[in-house]
Image 1 (cartoon, one colour):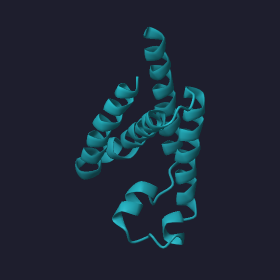
Image 2 (cartoon, one colour):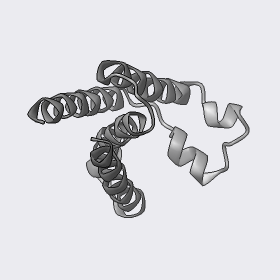
Image 3 (spheres, helix red, strand yellow):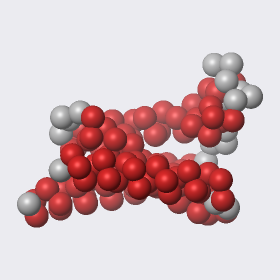
Image 4 (cartoon, one colour):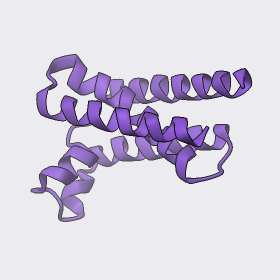
Length: 120
C-alpha cells in the first residue's frame, strides 16, 4: 500500500506543478485545491502509520488553517509576503469555495483509500 501512496504523491506532484505553471481559471484555483489535499493526504499516509480517518482530519485541519491564514495575510505576517514559493504554498486570497474543494478532495481521498484497502 505504501507504494501506492508514493505513486500518488509522485503523480500529483507533477500535475500540481503543471497546474501552477500552466493552469488558468477553475483548474488552477479549485481543481488545484482539490488535488493538493489528496496529495497531502497521500503524503501523510506514506510517511506515517496514522489511521485513515485521522489522516483525513489532519489534512483538513492543515488545509483549512492555511485558508484561514489568508484572511490575516499569514505569509505577510511571517515576513514571507514577497516570496513566490510562500505565496504558492500559503496562498494570498481567501475563498470560501476553497474550503468546499478541500472537503471534497479529502473525502475523495479517504473513500478511495478505504475502497482500495478493502479490495486487497
